[in-house]
Image (cartoon, rainbow, N blue to C red; front, side, top):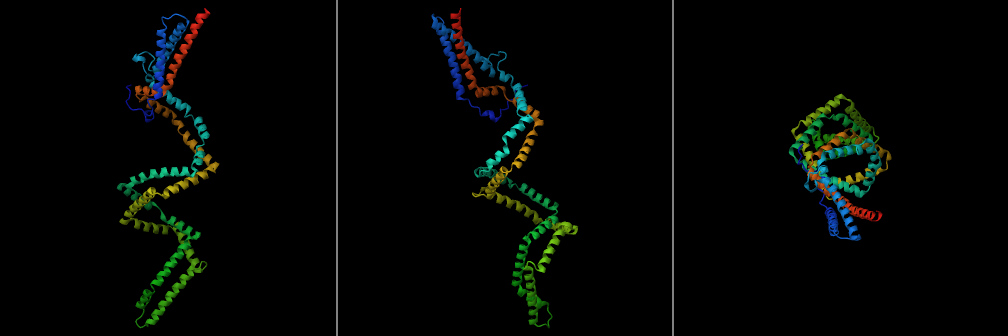
Amino acid sequence: MPQSNRPIPAFDDAVPLDRAWRQNRLIASAMLVVAAAIFAATGAAAGFWPSLAHAGAEAALVGGLADWFAVTALFRHPLGLPIPRTAIIPANKDRIGAGLGSFIERNFLAPEILAARLRALAPVRHAADWLAAPDHARLVAARVSASLAPIVRALEDQALRDFVARSFHEQLSDAELAPSLGRVLALLTRGGAADALFDRALDAAQEALAANQGRLFAIVAERSRWWVPRAIDRRIAEQIVAAIEEWLGELRLEESDARRRCRAAILALADDLVQSPLWRARVAAIKTQILAQPEVQDWLGAIWDELRRLVLDDLVATNSRTHAALAAGLVSLARTLAADPAMQERLHAGLEHTALAVVPWRGQIAALVAEVVRGWDAGTVAARLERALGSDLQYIRMSGTLVGAGVGCVLFLVARFAF
């Protein structure tokens, strides 16, 4: 199969041509040169010490060269010669990838290992403790706010605006509003919120009545008989205004019969909106009639534009309410979660279930690792692995040279004095 020229993933691009690797390689090579120089210098010399040095240098050369060959053979052919069983990593790259995938599958993705590791990490508790600190929550909120601004800016497309408007229109068309309106109306009435709105409506009615008394007098006069004196018309109008004011005043009293009847009528209307098919049909007809207006589509699109503008203005503001709300919400959520071990256990169980859900696909994950490694260029992989691991591997060459020198000296001494 021909080798692919696809680049190695970015994690490997960070491996530098390390200074320590160059230095250690230079030191190991220098030690071999020194051993060779001593071996050459003491070859013709006589005497105990020159002979001892010659034997040590000879063994150092053998050990150093053997380890140089072993280290080099991992990554390439020594001296470029196609010696069998050399360039091990390039020649076995695909097998290494398959082994790596199998190793990950058996030692990282096994169900018992994943479950035990997650239980030991307790990520939910640690995350809650970390987020409970206001500084940490503000940091997360700042990152979220900063990422939201470009997303919101990207929502300027006219087609997207039209789509959102159509979606709003479709959602409103499909929604059955009558039951929801009835429940909200009943909730407001029983909770007392409707009383405040009712009082505001009474204030508005009182103000309108006071502002339009002249108009009311004129209407009574216009509809009165020609022979009825104007003073009588005005007196009738005043009585009408007084009656209306008296009725409005009675409605203001919390326990008045008129107030109770109004409250009962509102609750009856709320019940009809929830239960009555007739009222549901009426509300649906009104809704359909409103949505059929061309201006409604433009209004729905304008809602999207305004929401987008408000969100964007707030995200870029110095004192962003979104940022503050996110930070406060994160702190509150984290502190509540930190004080609730039962919820932590539930979330940990959910995380464990999610993590274990990948187990049935662990064979595919292993195959993916093998496939990715198979696509790497063998020479580049070997070169970069050598630079990543070579600094430590050069110590093998140094150790081989030193151990060889020691063994050579010991063997010389044994041969000299034992036989």
